[in-house]
Image 1 (spheres, rainbow, N blue to C red):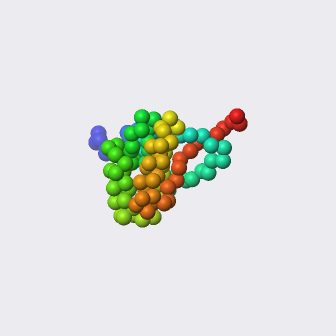
Image 2 (image 1 turned 45 degrees about the vertical axis):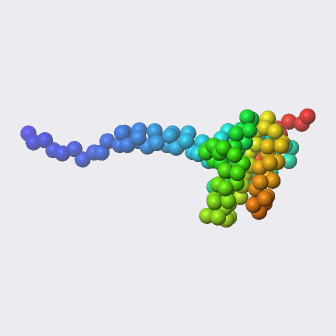
Length: 134
């Protein structure tokens, strides 16, 4: 009796690998897109903006550390230099400033003044939707 080659393909391992990759992408993608997690102030008239990938995300944490994307910067001057370089490469990008609600207003104002000083006026302040009336 001759053994014939089996013509069926076992797709179970392939499906397992694809599902694991899908789960990895689903978990990692939000972390890449949003940068550093901060607790944003809540506003009643929240304008939703779709994340189109054209924003330079700047985050200020509660302890007033500055991040551009996921990269921590030492000073406002470093931030301004990095944003100017990014705007030079891609002028269509806007600055999306996410300030933790516990960060001081003065720190946020310093950043906005520094950006205005180098003619970057397209700054969007990040907020969360207020879900209840006070």
